[in-house]
Amino acid sequence: MGKLILAELYKESRKKSFKIFILLIIFVSVLSLILINKNLKLESEQLDIYPQYSEEEYLDVNKYGSYSQYLKDYENYKSYMDKEIVKSEVFNKTKINALYIYYPTFLFVIGLVSIFISFNILSYDYQSKSLRYVFQSHKGRNKILISKVITVILLSIFYSFLLFLTFLFTLCFLTKENLLLETIPIYLGNSLKYVPIVLYYLFKTFLYIIPITFISIFTVFLTIFLKGNTFALIISNILYFCSLLVSQILITYGYTFIRYSFLPYLDFTYFENSKSVILNNLIYNLDLSIEKGFIILIVYSTLFFIFSIKFIKRDV
Amino acid sequence: MEKVIEVKNVTKEIGNNLIIDDVSFSLESGKIYGLIGANGSGKSTLLKIILGLYSAEGEVIINGKNLRSNFEEVMSSISGIVDYVSFYDYLTAYENVRYFAMLYDVNFGRVKEVLDIVDLDYEDKRPVSQFSLGMKQRLGLAISLLKNPKILILDEPMNGLDPIGISKLRKLLLSFKDKTIIISSHIISEIEKIVDEVLFINNKKIIQKTIFREDNKKPILFKLSDYKEASKILDTPVLNEETSVYLSDNEVSKTIKEMVKRDVEVYRVESGTLEDDLLKMLEGDTNG
Image (tube, rainbow over all chains, first blue to last red; front, side):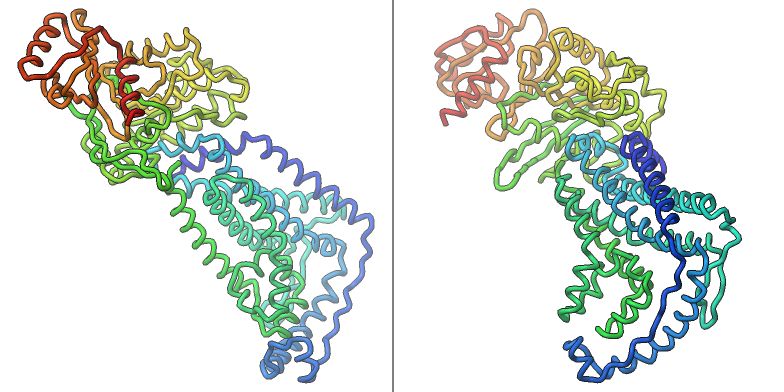
């Protein structure tokens, strides 16, 4: 398996797109940070606890919801918001924190790079018919597929960490501060703790690799299913970009079963704004969270991987 | 001689089209086999089935092992060129072969060896996108030789090659004494020069014929009244009233006598070629 992964990495690293993505990630993130830094005004966000709805008001907003459930959830919301208000007062006091807020958006964009790599790693083989030589390997199609998926994930991790390091060094340069010494306030249990900013965003990088891994496996599946047709790339991109919007629309119309699908969890930037997540959960009786997203995405990734194994056995 | 490939009752349908119908044959070690048939007769499909690229009903046994249940072991000894492939056109020839060497778990030293065999420069820095069709065919052959396979399957390897290229390929294939080679081509005259036996694929079936190279034997075309009885006399499958077999002058007169003895009317006897044989078969097929 190791040799198969090395073979894929060898082939992928020689593509022009590999070098272009490296340059693009560095150039775009450095340029954006310089521009944001120039125009940044340090302002703390004013957080308010929104007032409790009466039953009539609640049903006006969510006619499919349960008011008794809403009342129970409102207490949880209030205690959460008390903490958030304390946290937000300290969070945006430093320029580094304010700049780092943009990091998740950039991580989301890495997903698009992963979609492209996932499509390309198989579509090229289908279109050039080189798959007929690849499948003559005695290793078998399953192992070849696994090696291709692992290669895509490794490349996604590589690009994510390249982004992380670019952010780290650019911010050190722009703020003239040592980021290793900076801390960020987060709630661990019931108390507000300060953790090193580098560790916090390193953890965040790992977290964002989960939806990126899912969309990569999904793209691999679609590419196999459509035998390398460009539609696989288009469908994956649309799904990745519009997943949150589609989820929100469906939820508003009472289709809350969507919480069991992968759609609300493809864009983790949604969970960056805890206030809106809690409010949505409260108003529409949902339970969307990163933890649930983690489990759901793993389940769907496994499912699409099994489908990929089934379809890769077709005649080539 | 040892049987290296046994195809047993193989049937392949693509969509609702029956491409190969209950085909069985066996091939011996160290021989070169030609696979001949009209366009769309199922030549490529059959080769892809033997290479494990297509699934099919029936059994393919390579070196005594079932291809499906012993895939890993079987695929170490078989390799081939199937259809026109453009490879990774952003890589050089060396990089392409090196990638496949990793995939096939072959020592990197073999990369230069196979490029030398097919006469491609391993130091050539040009990407494959700048290669001619003939160079790409040779690159395909180099990749197929990486595993040093006992069985080599070549689907239309002469496509895109100039006369010198064809001649070089012929010499190369004849130099592989220890390999069993199946070669399909539309250039029947070329096939005739290198193969020991011919597999005709026609009407979704296979007919196997031996080509005798001894000086005193030549292809003889017969036109007969009873081709079923003639089949027994000639000891080869005969599908219609016209067929060609390799016989010496002495054998021709003996065969005609035997046919007369068994009430098989001989309408015509003349020197034929493999091409004549194929054309007659195809004519028979078209006429119904």
